Length: 329
Ligand SMILES: [Zn+2]
Image (tube, rainbow, N blue to C red; front, top):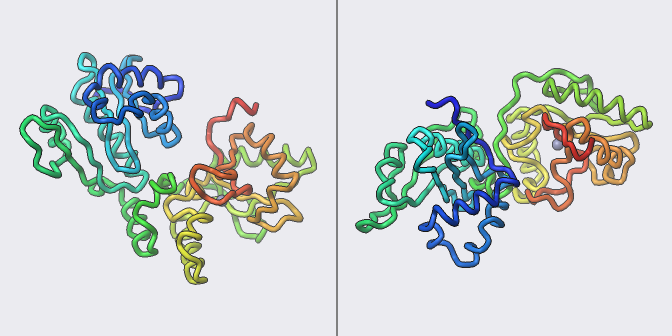
């Protein structure tokens, strides 16, 4: 394994270069794409950024490879490795990184179409032909991703089957699996007098934010913080028992294993005079204050009105992301 090789999601500023690479170096791929797409490579790459589905491999500050994941079709696409700089290990790690990413959306089987000369390499990585290809023709291969899944991910999949959550849930709502944080600490009592826990860094940021709000005579009250997968499953079960249709439930509650509350970084907030977890919060001074100031503390509104996850607006749900958004400081 090469320690200097780094794989990370591509950034907006890198797109035109990556589009050029596809245009010039992947002529075969271009042939298989409709003409309209060909003219809009950069626009299509841009669509991959919010889900971090465009990965690049960097070695000694040089781009050595890229790979894109088509979430909706569960396909590895547009993989490119610089023939001069990339080695088999880089390819293997790039493929494994895409698989890990696909698995985080709950994808259990990944497909790809490769040239005949790449077939045996992909076979060594566990890919098998799905149909018999003609001599010299590109071959479509697939790999079962479940065998490499972590135990907690398998338990989540099992829980989803039991609750009747659709198997394409993560892809459909563009939500990723989030492991339970095992290092949370108490931040005191919530409005129902239950102990509430948060991730350590989020807890510090929360305390500073709450104090700052108080200076503007705004009282921020926590309603919910860290939640286990089992607790989230209980919330879904309760709604199912009340005969709420699954589609309706999933627009307002994340499926177990996919809730930001598992990370211990998400906080549901309210303020005196507002009923907790209600749309009313969006009309409060507290919400207005959060919109203006929360970013300074690393808290962001995860599901704003008309969000790309197609989840109901949750003005009360704020999540701490370790980096501070420079636009709001
Ligand atoms: Zn929440």
